[in-house]
Length: 434
RNA sequence: UGGGGCGGGGUGCGUCUGGUAGCACGUCGGACUGUUAAUCCGAAAGGUCCAGGUUCGAAUCCUGGCGCCCCAGCCA
Image (cartoon, rainbow, N blue to C red; front, side, top):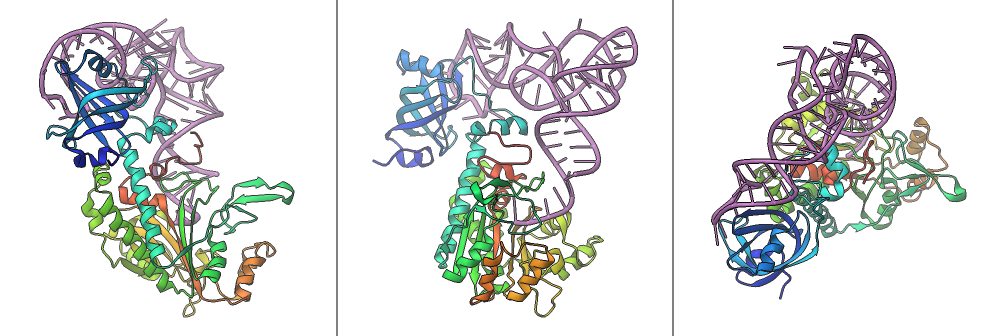
């Protein structure tokens, strides 16, 4: 017989099952008690009456404390009055561990502040909303891999310990590396997968990069997860096409497999159903024109900035890709547009509803000489990048890729304003515990 | 790295105009045979983040520190 889970309770109607879980809440009314259990897949109400239960079962249920672990046995019954439509007619209750009465579970079912909840993150993840968010996160990751794998991509992990910065600008977490001096936690796998892309054609890496920037906004973590595809012989158009297909597939998968989670999160699925391809595409110039119509004073040449990105992202009901930014506002490794060298062949995808940037990518500089020049302009040490220069020396091809921020994508799809809830244990400027 | 805000029972807050703590939730006890973050009755539980200062008197005002939150910059 299949293992019983609350999510699949309907399949077990009329059967005797063992629910292995925790007490979520206990409601009682005289001679009838309704313990509500959770098992990681959902919530389910059980019912026991004084008349039908043994003295021992009756008092054992009455003594249950919040989050005590239990194995509840009984029959699954269809019951329209029960949340979820099914309830467990309790026959036996095995208490695995009792939460002590004098030291109760700290997170009650009422409202709490962010600080309190984050200090109890190890327990907060049990709450239905947080659990739904983590399930949705898993689906986003699963769908992303499924999509890339189906297109022939090979996952090639990039190292987390690196000898130098991938992009000179941002700050890195450093550490001592034996006798070899200073090492750093990677801020992107990109440079390394440019190498594996030249070996395997289409590749991706998926892992945590680290950023020691002192950012304290709703869209930044110091440790987060980024999915980075990289393709040999790819143009900017190929990248935009891929990013669009990838995000559309994530959306479709969430809609297909996370209906219950969306409901728990009170996220209107119609908002996601509307996200049909094609998404919008605007050049930087067109975006600037639109922003100026909306009253922005932004001069040509500057990066858009958070406020303007929010403005753009609120203007569209689907993701919008902004491409061909002024080169001087962008990273050293981005290929200039041959038709207008002052532009970089890059693109950002902004999620709608004000969520902002979820994807950033570009075609990479493929000329050895230009890359050397860029390294010098950015005052980056050529020695540590000599292997990277080699990629332009031995069979250089047009190529490129992008990074997709998992937490940002999850927060957007789930409709939560802050990305700290989209990862089990967020790492932020002022928070490293638990 | 700038700008703004908050800090009190386990938790979330009110206290505008300074007078030695108040509400709600949770917890505990009691009532109720279909509850829906149940309801009703009762109880326990804090001396107000820390250090100074003003004042007859500070949770309240001022200064500094600590912790956290929000906004901006940077980016995924």
